[in-house]
Amino acid sequence: MKYHKPKTFEEAAQIAAGSNGVTRFLAGGTDVLVQLRSDVVTPDDLIDIKGIDGTKAITKRGDGGWDLGVAVSGAEMMEHAELKRDWPGLVEGMDLIGSTQVQGRATLVGNLCNGSPAADSVPGMIAAGCTVSITGASGTRNVPVEEIPVGPGRTALTKGDVISAVHIPPRGARGGDAYLRFIPRTEMDIAVVGCAVNLRLDGDEISEARVVLGAVAPTVVLVEDAAKAIIGTALDDGALDALGATATAACNPIDDKRGTIEFRRDVAAVLAKRAAKIAYSRAKGGQQ
Amino acid sequence: MSKHHVSATVNGDPVEYLCDPRETLLDCLRDHLGVMGVKEGCGTGDCGACSVTVDGRLVCSCLVLGVEAEGAEIGTVEGMGTEGNLHVLQEKFIEHAALQCGICTPGILVAAEALLKKNPDPSETELRYWLAGNLCRCTGYDKIIRAVMDAAADMREAS
Ligand SMILES: Cc1cc2nc3c(=O)[nH]c(=O)nc-3n(C[C@H](O)[C@H](O)[C@H](O)COP(=O)(O)OP(=O)(O)OC[C@H]3O[C@@H](n4cnc5c(N)ncnc54)[C@H](O)[C@@H]3O)c2cc1C
Ligand code: FES
Ligand code: FES
Image 1 (spheres, chains in turn red, purple):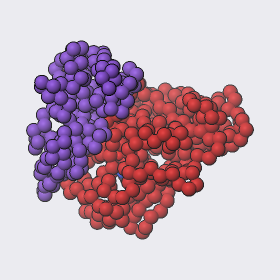
Image 2 (cartoon, protein in one colour):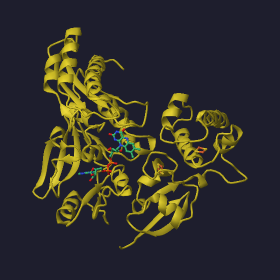
Image 3 (cartoon, helix red, strand yellow):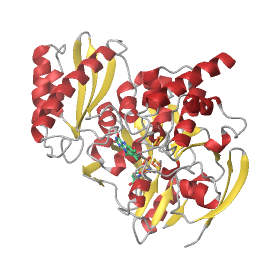
Image 4 (cartoon, rainbow over the protein chains, first blue to last red):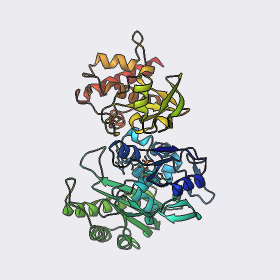
């Protein structure tokens, strides 16, 4: 294994493109080192992106949105009061990852690129409408987060592609987001179901919404029918029931020791309703 | 395989070591620097026995590569107190019998100290969540929680 510490994303992309073997990028290393350790993946070229300028920065843009460097850890996001105020759901999804120690290192992009369908920060990023910059051989392009995961452990990134930044849209007025997951314990476990909701209000009515489910299909899924079920409503009981039904219908889960197919379908509906209520109350200025 | 030369500080003292890029910071601390307070429980981020601070941030040293520590300030249990001059947390662990085999103890002490630096007055719930990544097979946790809460109260009074 060769360790590289490039100074620019272009250089990182070139090293990856020129490698003859297995490459991994090293952000927080909380997936890479576990896989290295358990002999699942020993990269031939390990490319540490933390020496690149700006990878630790959290920056508020002129339009009110945010740019996050790709080495920003979960702990740094949690400590950023203004980011948390704008996007509590996105930040709490990241905060659910692992222990305090894991939080000190783990990143959004590592969670995304590891490609787990149960990745806790990914539903929140997709619900928020985040995009990522990808630097590759042909320059840099901007891609919505929902286009990155393509299957368990697989992403749309091709050889020589490296994610160089995360972009969060402006929060804007009367918006709120939330993320909930179900795990059999209270800490340190993998989501059986995860659900993120992001919405905006016009008066009491929902004018925009995005509903995203994790751990119930081969990838995290953006459920458009679930959004439609609540847009134009004030999240009354009828809308909540319709939301639950569409969430259940969007599930294509596995059966395993953490949860049966039936259980996951059921919990998807419960979490979608609860997350929507929290997002709705946050959009109204509530603290929950 | 070419070795990497790394310069860092451990508990304020400058150190240098040569490491294979696959070696973790945990391996480097124990095998190259003889810092034996850092323990290996699982090697995969689950148990917290290997907890250290890197530039003030609490991490699992089994999930950091030795090469990544270039220029870093590393803190371990050895930096907390000495045999004749224990840290309040260490005294309280003895007083409350918050350890038995002791494998988890250095990691928990380092983790607890990191919390109290950030928040000198944590609630019990905050403390339990903070330490959720530090497993103990012996004590049942309650004594650990009481020791840390007691130490925190003493430290607040002393400051
Ligand atoms: C004890 C423990 C508990 C955990 N608990 C959870 C949990 O509750 N929920 C959860 O979702 N995950 C959990 N994880 C998994 C892991 O912590 C997360 O997936 C984390 O967000 C990974 O981020 P990282 O920065 O450490 O990634 P790394 O390990 O550095 O990288 C992960 C992958 O992303 C790729 N990558 C990294 N950066 C880039 C980039 N800039 N461009 C392209 N590819 C890149 C790497 O090549 C690699 O394949 C846990 C892990 C441990 C050890
Ligand atoms: S040895 Fe590092 S967490 Fe268990
Ligand atoms: S005292 Fe034995 S593991 Fe905690």
